[in-house]
Image (cartoon, rainbow, N blue to C red; front, side, top):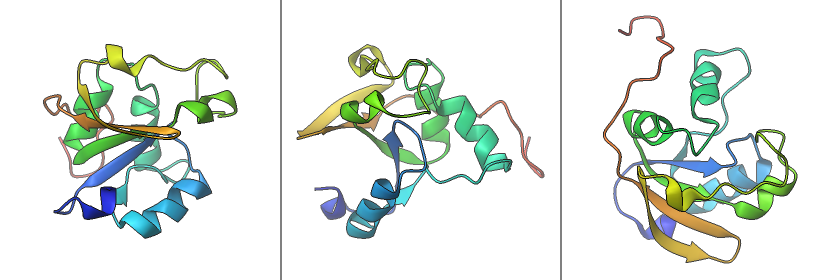
Length: 127
């Protein structure tokens, strides 16, 4: 489904972590990923601002980064180190900046509908 969506856009997979499975599927769908920031980089600082999918600012920052879709993997919250409470699955339906567009076994796809918000961390040459 994702590979058939036209135009060049960015996808964020949640939990927001560096998961090799996300990279595998990226080879199939050919869309750029928010995931994959190297520790200690500016991108990693931005990642820390959007790691909580329920934070009200997250969808706006994702939109600012060019993200069109969030792929939410509820089952991965059972073992991820990038979540507040391991095993607790966020109720993404409460996130007003996301609109559910598709469901698959083990994943739900949300469109980012929030207006863009600049991340609080400012990189060189920005601001």
